[in-house]
Image (cartoon, rainbow, N blue to C red; front, side, top):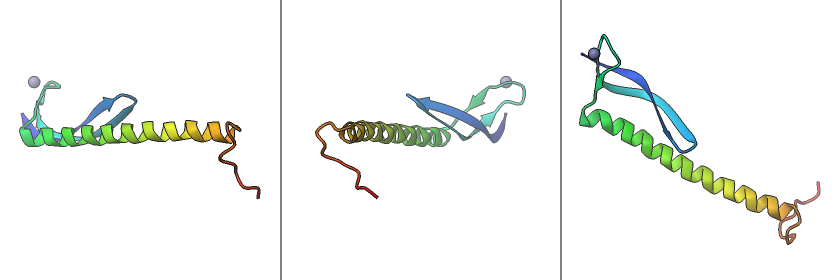
Length: 82
Ligand SMILES: [Zn+2]
C-alpha cells in the first residue's frame, strides 16, 4: 500500500462532488484505507454538499414564488418597464 490521493465522488440528493481523497492505496486493486484525518476530508466535502443542496432548494423555492408573482398572481411584483 502506498500513501497517495485518488479522485473520489460523493453524492447527496441531486448534488455530487469529485475531489482528491487522501489515503493508503493498494497497487493491485481498488482497495484503500483511510485514517481519521483522511476521513475529515470526505466529511468536509459531504457537509459542503449538504449546504449546497440546502441553498439550491431555497433558491428553487424563491423562483417558484417569483414566477407566481410575475405571472399575475396577486400582481405584487411587477417588472419595471424599460
Ligand atoms: Zn489490494
